[in-house]
Amino acid sequence: MTYRAGFYLIVTAAVVLAALTGAASSTLAADGQAVQVFILAGQSNMQGQGVVSMDHPDYYNGGLGNLVWSMANSASKDMMQHLKDASGNWVVRDDVEISFKVNDVVRKGGLTIGYTGYGGSSHIGPELQFGHVVGDYFDEPVLLIKTAWGGKSLQVDFRPPSSTGDTGAAYTQMAGEVHDALDALGSQEYELRGFVWQQGWNDMISSSATAEYADNLVNLAADIRVEFNTPNLPFIVGELGNGGIAHPGSSMQKFRDAQQAGTDRIDNAIFVETHDFARPANMSPNVTHGHHWYGNAESYFLVGDALGKAAVPEPSSALLLAGLAGIARLRRRRRER
Image (cartoon, rainbow, N blue to C red):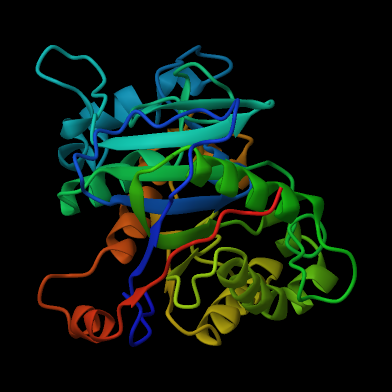
């Protein structure tokens, strides 16, 4: 991981107006505490492609690498036991909530498996272990606002307003979904804790997109901070770690270098390496889906774990002290409609 001094600045916001009509309301029991909010954004690897239990011998490699198998057999199995309760049921946390809009419907509820683009409980993404890490850290309730679509580039779809050309439709939709989820908190006070970006495949496969990725990433961070009136919002970038170690000079390595270079130019930002979490195709459910970590649940679990640990400070960290010295308290104005 690459850390930048002052990363853990905290931006606090209070929402003073009721939720918009039709918006999914929050079920978090805040009890006077500020809800800790994280935005999880990106493309299909943020959506989540980690297989939970499907094990057809032809279509899912007999279940190798799915979440059930990983909890019993993977190198990370001891880290995963909190995902089920003593009766073998998937844990649903009541102190960590997810809001994720899929096909124009907002799905909201306690942290558990299934908050992906597929619906149901068939897959996981980074949000699962990310939510457990930050939920264990904070005494206050946590809200994860997830906004992601597959096959989207930063060059075109998520193109931020500060980059030349047209603002991407996915950027506009992402901002709108986050505003709606914050509005749905109604009168509950919240603290916007971080923006987590897990994206890149569609830019990696394009040399022109890779060439401008660092600039677009810098602009994305700046525009998101303006959008939510949070000038010090922590910005967390997950490496495109698919496939493990990249060959020097390869398209993947050039893209990762661009991710790192862009992150290094952003104040209050962190780059999280993930390539060590890649698992081989023959030990994964989707043996032809390298762009989706082969559907390996351990990979998605570990990505979420690393992103979560990057999002919360160590108790003795000098970064924490630097962040606390610069706490900015801001009252967000309701978005113009």
